[in-house]
Length: 225
Image (cartoon, rainbow, N blue to C red; front, side, top):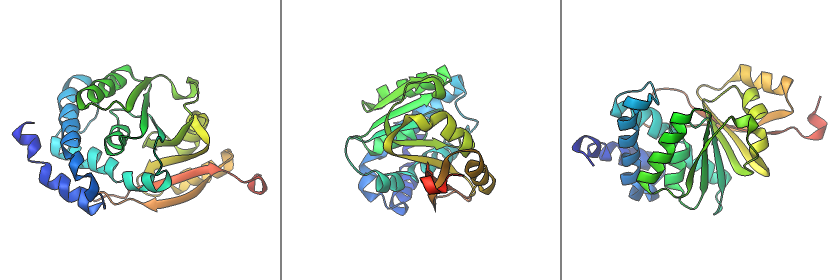
């Protein structure tokens, strides 16, 4: 690893500790190798508008790490199947795959160059548990995932409508958002059979911005309008 990326070891370690993830300090080499791959391939693939490695570390890696412990709390078992919808450069899918090598993670995206990057990065990092899936989310056969997650992918209503069928019968539907999306929650309630079951604030180290995680579920029969 180049000196430039090795210099991020200290802030990455501090971020993991602040997130209650000291047990994942041994994953730092893989996390930094992912950052290096993202920076290298971004020049050719235009994977993200964030260009500087230090900004990528916070806005992409730390932002994705912030959801790891909450997802573990929701689905902590082995052999968990995770579907990252609109995964782009593998965020948060690859980060979840690094931190949970006993989970199978599907990174789904309709843009071929992005799934090609995920496939390339997973190969370089030795992530046999991460699979790139190229296709339109609503057209793919159900992945029967224990966790279906998205990061700034679509409105809540669009998310459940295009990706809801990928959730297993007892699976979790999770949406990563910025500030709590009041308007989206109202639209979800009025236009779909889904509701917000719970939500929590996410702390992203070194980021001065609001982040939250919403768990969505089908309304109980007596809630249906």
